[in-house]
Image (cartoon, one colour):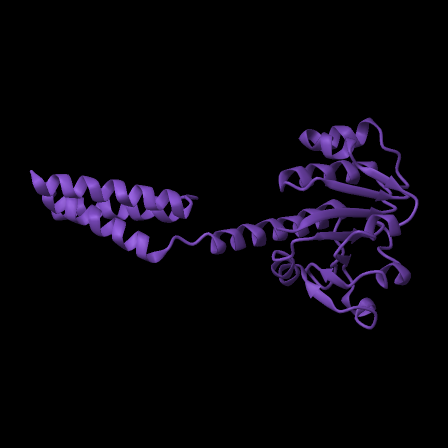
Length: 233
């Protein structure tokens, strides 16, 4: 899973900084960097951060972008204007970006520009590529905190999806386990409909669990022992 760093470049409004800290907390991200903030961090930001106040309190304030990105494996900028940046950097949709970044193990710095004007061309040149959020072409520019929320949501969902894919139950274990459940049901003379419901319930439990392979082997040995004992009686 990538280590995500949210970098706000010269944020103008304290309320937005507070909301950004809040959505970072919502999706489990902790690294907030503020580059030359125009807004003063006071009670307003803390109030709107809600339970993300700890993210706000740990925020790193810098005078330039370079220290915020120097240790990043990948630097990504955000924009609402794809045509203006296409000649400078490749532009990806936020969902495509999230899917790509979900497999990265290092740190990813995501730059969000000023509320009135976004990132400058010089700042865009520091990025490996740009990310855009598809929106109504008549008015595609989102509020800063809303844009951060959408980007972090997409990353959160993509990393969760990848984690589920990587945690696949070995099919032979699941098949053997359910086979023993079926045999035990036959042995204790369950009605066919009840048997089907029981097998379905166990199947859901197996595939929804976060059990390790070792734990599954232990459970399989246990249920096999139950089956053997039933057959002896």
